[in-house]
View 1 (cartoon, each protein chain N blue to C red):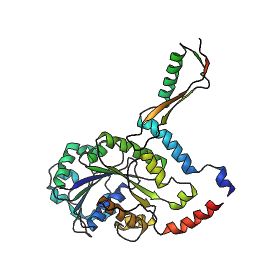
View 2 (tube, chains in turn purple, green):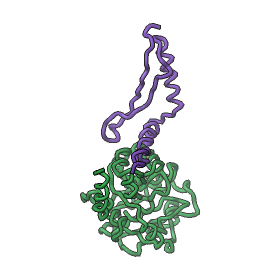
View 3 (tube, chains in turn blue, green):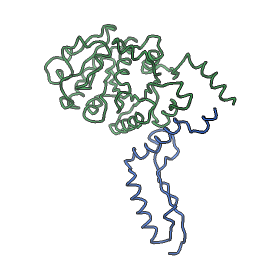
Length: 86
Length: 263
């Protein structure tokens, strides 16, 4: 019984993996492209401010809406600013 | 004017042919005039699942190439007089047929039949393009596995790009014991991911293998899968039947889960 709670259900693992996978499948977005987007964002922002490139994260998530056609992905970016003045 | 339904999945081995055979037979059993077309050129199988492999004279490619009339390639089913099968060619490849030719053929057949069921090959290449060309609506078959669902999602995207108005889902090979343990995605999980209407949920039933061995579709008999396929056919005819994949087992299982919930 205890083992059941220790390990995450494999069906949840499958569902979570699929959700991430299908977002990039649906928009033809590869991990390489995400990396490119990330470096581009860094280079643009660096012209204006000092950002923490180590802990910044960008990812594509699904916006919460119902129906297949209403479902659209959005780019989520968390970029910590070290100093506003360059 | 009849309706042309393509049964597709992307991934191979998820149950397209079994679904085609049972949906076709089920609709015929409910009094509809049905023709099933095996569009998997080079790898035909619908004939063996239906137990009609010994009656093949002409095939789909013969019709397309004008070697015979459409009627000559239609094999009458041994169980239902309103059910016909047009087998695929075994010794040719996918390039023998073009999408425009499939449109012409399905347009011709839907004048005479209530339903034209197209058994689509696996993949997204020419065979798939041929199969969907003349279809009015699509049924996507998948199983609760990551690989099958990913392919189903891709297929749905392609069908939407081809302006399909109606795309429904059949979830095949469900195992309630595994779902209860959390080791298989549930019906709700899969519908949530794929976001298309659910037409049916088919339990993983050993009777499917037995039926295929015998060349007899199991729709309409009292097996779990047979009843689930019959419900799919009734829903296609517009009847409002709730999705219950495992009618008899539900009560036992709700007791079992009841114990877990208390802890």
